[in-house]
Length: 517
Image 1 (cartoon, rainbow, N blue to C red):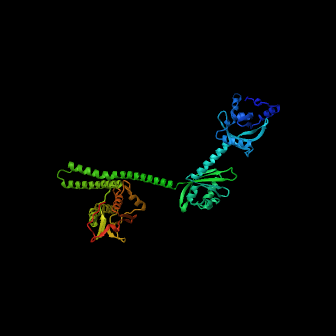
Image 2: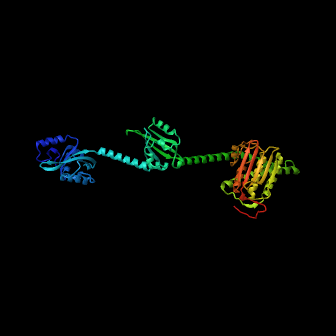
Image 3: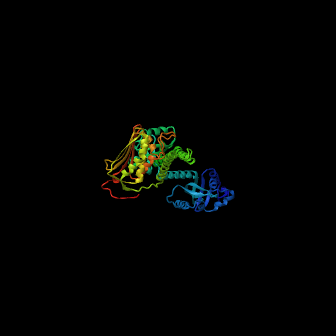
């Protein structure tokens, strides 16, 4: 076919050329076809096909080759029905492929006409590619939103801002709050009863008056079964639809908050432990150096025989001071080593039925001299009919630590009661009660921490490692017993080691039974 449409058709009259010239001015493409052959097309069609003067010969190829392969059967089916006089749509859409390979969407309006004495189909083509893509994008967006709406693990809620009625909710919402769709849709959101704070909805809406969206709003909501859980809300106003809507999403952060709080507690405990150990090391510099200095100093006096070679009595006194300082130093080191075993989970208890009075009297004999020197009286009361399932070493350390602490923190003239008696629940209580300086609840908490000392300054009134009560607590737990502390400042302190009923026997029922744990 020639490039000029005016000369493309044989036997064209002047009137036809005038009509063709007119048709070349319209923006819509005009085409006439008979079967698979193009009979006429205007300039708009040539532009759609991407045909110019140099490629006009391409117009001689079959009509079907210009149509997208996936749409050819549709176009040919409509064309066949139309020429047969069957019912066919006046307007329908399909795709064409231009010379450049570009895919265009066409809205086609067609009818059968007489073309030079024979029937043909005349059609107008309108390029609707932009509109089609816009619709496709909108459909894709809507489909994507619908999928997100239905599968997101966060609950989503759409409601009318004018009346507050719920328009739609996603499945997550129904699952989280244990509701049915029919009872939620159309119900004002404040009547759903899921917001614990009655003023929250009003404040929430008020904030939206000055902002198009809100993010990360904390709120407590009543979920399935009335369980209160914590959420973070995100909301955005949706306008331009005739009515103002609000899309709200909620993320359950209850477990996340719990984990964050647990991590914070762990950090706080770790920091507290580090601070406590640092304080302990600072305090122990005094406790360790004092006996070491005494040991070195008195040893040097004996070695160099400062008071002469015959001052045996004086050297015996120095040796006693060395022994006392070494014993104190060994006690501190033993406490530290025992605590390290506790923290490493390597503390062992060899349990057997034993007469606790023997251990407790030994504790008394070790502490009596210190009590006498401090002007403190120790009263004891042991039920000799009791046998305990316990570890002799641990029981002795419990009694010695508690008794030493009681004497240490009781002023001259005070009294310490040391007893082992049966109690109402058929168990037994190893009790140490003093009339000493006492402690506040906060000080009791500090005293039970490893390395914790109520008076932690270097000039404190009493020496010690600050490990006594923590070790007693660890030993008590290992024996299957329970420790309680009651104390009041300037009144005194009472510590009870409660042995349950299964850990005691009357002496006449006791068997020679030994268990090792």
